[in-house]
Amino acid sequence: MAEDIALTLPDSLRLYQPDRLGFDQLAQTPNEWFVQRYPLAYQNHGSPFLELLQLRDGFSQQILSLVLNHDFFAAVLGGRKDLNHHVIYFVPEMEWYFKDSDNIYKTTTQEKLQNQYRALMMKCAQDMPIQVHKLNLVHEFRSDRNAKIILQRAKSILAADQSYFSATSSNQRIRGPELYERLMRVLCDTMLEQSEGGCLTVSEAYQVFCKLAQQNSLDQIKRSMFKEIMRDLIKDEFGVGLRRDVLNAENKQQEGWRGLKLLGMEGLVG
Amino acid sequence: MHCINSRISDQETNPFLKKLDRLDEAKLKYAGSEWLLNFLRTERCLKPPVLTDEQLLLWQKTLP
Image 1: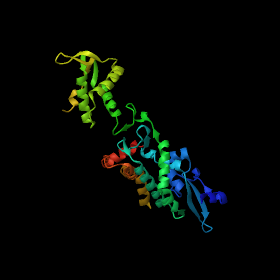
Image 2: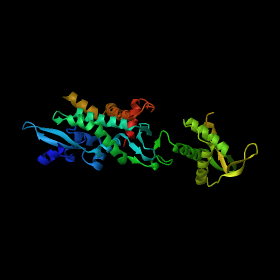
Image 3: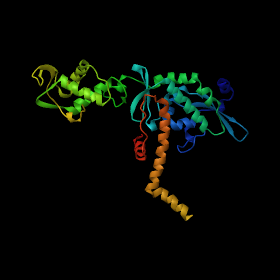
Image 4: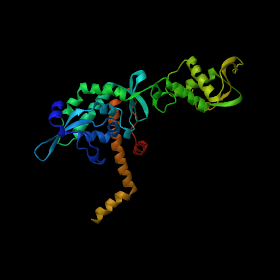
């Protein structure tokens, strides 16, 4: 149908026209409705729909959304920037994450994203005035076929790599191996101090770390894994290497660091 | 007429009315934000607590 109209009525076809819309105006077309809410998606991927304008009775026009721009709607799933929303597809784990209102990224599913897409399309249809033909908005564009195509496109448009949730990134998620390294960095930054004659054994540091992990509702990790990451962090931050001749409280030689001491133990529970 | 004019001028200058306007705007925006986020949340996602009026205004200030 769209191809027939493109051939017979090319002058009646419209993409979104930026000059008409003020930000305080109510959207009169589906294109306006979506661009008002997702201006960045429009900047990057163009008009949400190809619309057909038809004269109804000599005085008024009827607007029919004819063709859907799948790329625009894939970008829409990325979230509204003005509401601080953000959705990514985390490629290393093939998982969808959204930024919740506590600023922590949580996992979601592609079915839930499809639900959101369909709800947006329906809300747009409900907000439209009488001269907008709503059949495609309510039926065709909300079909499983279209929702699946959009989700597939969104995987590349919203793709994020390993660095997105790295231990030094400002983006934090609810679960992930990098959370342990983040906590170890906190331990290094706030609870360790260089001190001449000071000693810190791996066991002492691990004990403190386990309490910190418990406070932050994280599961424990193996001591060997802790030692491996901590060794590199302390080397980077304090320039001190791990050695095997550090004396503990019972005067036994242990693995640990010389010239470091623990601070701020009072804040830890248990 | 005088009454209407003074009311309009009150709305522009009265800090209490201004705060109510900002609060209404924040409530509307927050409701829209939660409407969208609720589609993505799963049962095991802890839902953030309901915000007080002051927290709502603060939340609005954090938006880009």
